[in-house]
Amino acid sequence: MLKPIRFVPSGTNIRFVNKRGFAFTLSAIILLASVFCLTSLGLNFGIDFRGGILMEIRSSNAVNIPQIRDRLSTLGLGEVTIQEFGKETDALVRIQRQDGAEKEQMAAINKVKDRLGSEFEYRRTEFVGPTVGKELKEAGIIAICLALLSILIYIWLRFEWQFSLGAIAALSHDIVSTVGLFALLQYEFNLATVAAILTIAGYSINDTVV
Image (tube, rainbow, N blue to C red; front, side):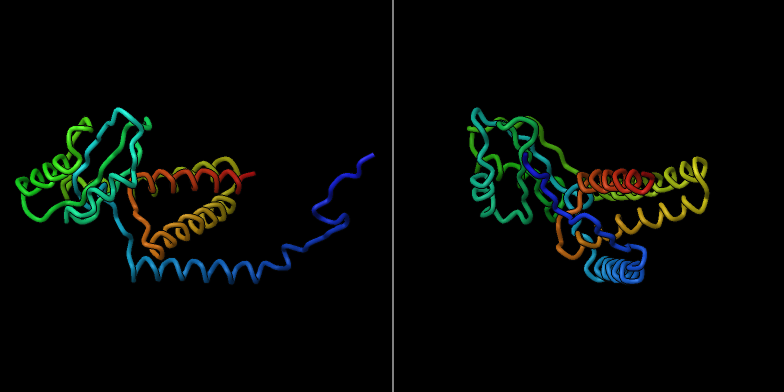
């Protein structure tokens, strides 16, 4: 008869509560480091928040993201990001906002079309202005704040107000440390990131309640 595999020896008794001082200290260091990174380095906002050009393209075959990136990197358009969009034959091209007015933005679009050629179908082209980007940034902040407030009210009504404060403290710790990591590594912060942060908030509060 096979013996069960034990990853943790039987009788193991770890006194987690006794380690709370170390945990509090580590959490405080992480929070302070996150706030420092946010205030000193700031977030690397993507085109969604800073404004720019968005182009949806389609190929008859699976798109080769690295090849497209190499072909567009020499155009001198600044930040250009390419990602798959839906099907493997579709891709989304994001170009940072060019200096100047609408004429300069159209010139950048034409450069991309000339470089990629007729092998792609240009299904959608949009320009996100700086005003729209600012509105999206504000909407993202409001969405996160409303989520925190809703969770606070729910736990307050469902359990006790002391528990709601503890849950919000734990949730804020997770969100601030995540955003601080984005500031430290200078990863692009866009609408998808906001959705990811809200997802983290959901998992965090679920773990706290359970």
